[in-house]
Length: 508
Figure 1: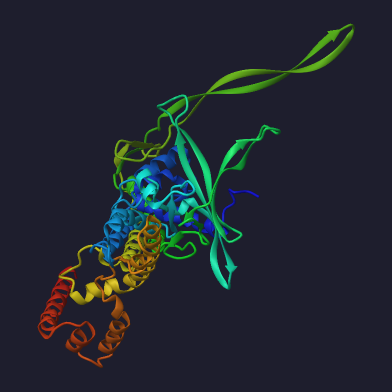
Figure 2 (figure 1 turned 180 degrees about the horizontal axis):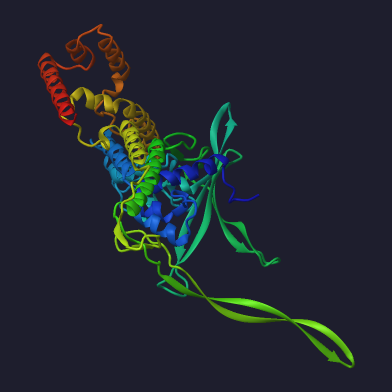
């Protein structure tokens, strides 16, 4: 039995979360990973690769998309529905017993969950001495609180069938903490595991730490603390741990963009490397002997000699090191500060510049452009540069439709789990159940792009493109614009088409 065991799904997803998180953290994180994201070119050594890596540039597409998604969710404040008496309000204003309000608490966990969709909210309570009343608990500071656990720390879990219903029966949380020992300026980093589990239908917590075995003198994981939480003097029959946005880990909605972002990074690195060697002409001189440099080499000469001892002559071999000087051509360098010298047949030397064509550069540029286009389509207008002319309201909405379908599901599921955690935390704090059960915490789902009307909009696009309805009918009946808004929008569309057509003619 090993408390450090990791769930197979956790192992599978963690490497994907790392990719997304590195891309969100940006260039420093991606470059620290080195060859994981930027393989070493064939024939390069460590020195070459170091310069290749240094020249590379990582664009912040994933970061900007994550910030855009986060901005959509919190473009409007979360809504709190239901009666909130003083005790409930006190709980919401200090949700984690560290002074954090519920909105900031949720903001932090949602930002983490966008990159790594496997966040947990543990509803916990300070251990209460047996027989203590609610008033005594409040006076002594014993109270309930919420704490959120990031994806990396929820390493194992299990659902069991109990009373014909699958319920959470085990959760293992990895907790990294620091302790001050002899050196107050250098805390010692340690790890322990908090196990939440159902035992004979009762919820218990166990803390596992490494302890030295008295017999073997080896450190092993042992239970150092056990705690049975109670509500109104009775143990709980469920684990108050709520996972977002689903019951199992998921791939981040940003993963496809992160993959493209890394591909863009690799192509850009190759392109910048190509420019480094081809953008600046190199001087050359033809018709004189190239400079040579002296190279001192050691060679070993083997000689044979006879040795006579006690009337017996034997032949032995002896190695004698010798040093010779060789003249070899100097290293060839490219770049504006270099001069190449080539020995030719002409009696009169010639001087000129090498101007490499940089074959392959255009293909790299085309690939980079294609990847940027794919990223823009995935991320919508969040990372799209200004287009020629004015983007229409129709285009702006359609850019958002697919993205919002995923984002809407994410926020809806997250809102439900956050609500359940708050309800139980408040109930444990002493708020009456009839009040907590009427409370709801809702994240914003009112995004640009007519999320709830996506199917209708797509149907309207097909009808319009097939000439079955007019542009004006589409704007009014399928996008919900008023007659005045539709007329103005149609005017803008016509003007934009004229601008684009005019620009294209100028470019030709």
